[in-house]
Length: 69
Figure: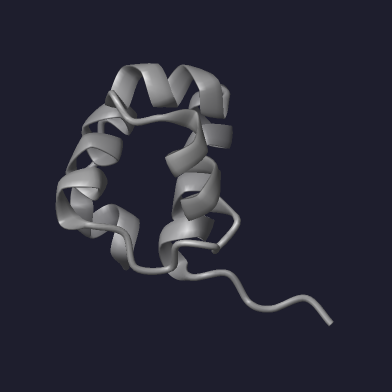
């Protein structure tokens, strides 16, 4: 049975698909490591630090609220 992904993970996936960019591209845009981004997106880090979320949100050109809702 697959565990449910946190909203943050689902929303990152959604915005990646919407923008048509890869995790690697986002990691560069957001100045976070690909490893960190991957762990968040697969749910291994369900509660990332706010500073990391701010960077990811900026890289996706969305608000932090858009990622956590």
